[in-house]
Image (cartoon, rainbow, N blue to C red; front, side, top):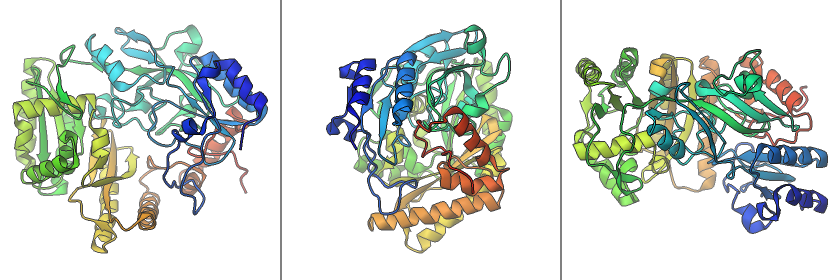
Length: 520
């Protein structure tokens, strides 16, 4: 449906005609043309936004939000989003935040950075490294927003030592669903960004927990992220073409290994012990297929590397980067790893030990340049996140339960064997855990894929609920919150109260969060 002319002209008045468009050529480019769980049956393509607006400031965002509330038009904001950024119905405009791309402050002493939502990981990390600092950035890639409220879960390659965005979120500037500006934590009390919780009561649990509201609770226009010590060079020389960036040598006191194990229990024990000893800088639960895609520039090269790497691994594995703050610190971490490897039967992938190849891998995983290839690789597409649990051992039990289902589907011929093992990793040295199951679909058509996805979702959810594994990262939408809520303290009722209070007009489109529908 077309927008009312007075509404559209008001948008132009706020932003200027050059920063608003309702041209179908433009709005179509923002659509994500796949079937989604939140869509009605038989619907294949997501509807287009009625218009796209590009605000450049908090004041402009606030003016648009208030305009939408007055005219009963919904809006949905995002920055660099891969997914979850689209509407499921008409009468919704897009707020594309790409013009809000400034680093507002880097505080070296306080170890935080204040940023706008379109600051991407590569942009912030490059500036931080000049100052001996770095940040954990979303594992989706360095081209994604690094703001802790724009990255869903915010799991990244450095999460072993640098946590994830729920824990790295500090002060926030927030335009609520009805157009009020709220400044959380120290920002609201005296204008500094260093704390998200005070002085006074905290609202951080309102705006995000394990995951973010996925644009369903207003617009987050700025936020501060905790940063970490960086013992590497201020600039890392790279050559080559993405994702096959190369580097002539590893920096001092850096080491990268890919370790594989005959038994999955040995792999889990090695991960646990690496966390217990706190020697890991980066720990990612990759398999040989993901390692191959991280270096390949086309699908044939991907398959060639997979064949080459497959001969150097013995089973499930993970990637590990160790970084020393001094030569003595590095020597301790290296000797500790050698002992863990000997006692768990770990095998090191020899190609990764090569100085040139290893240095290239290290940069790609620190910068996170290969994520799109890891996801859309020649050997199949990732089947999705199955969850995040409070502690790593709980996550391992969950992934083992759901991985049995994958084997059953392979045995039934419903999916293809992609020779990959469960994606498991620890976060914060084992204080929490993350897992994914990677699926190679049998190319029998979209109906077949949808059926397999439905089976996987049902069984993964059933396992999480019956096994008391917590609420996984993939839980969004009314249907899923209504499924989990009664089993987890009726949290869905509280989410709806939050939605009603901070967005009483339901202007912030929330199909990927929760709506304020009336409870029966």
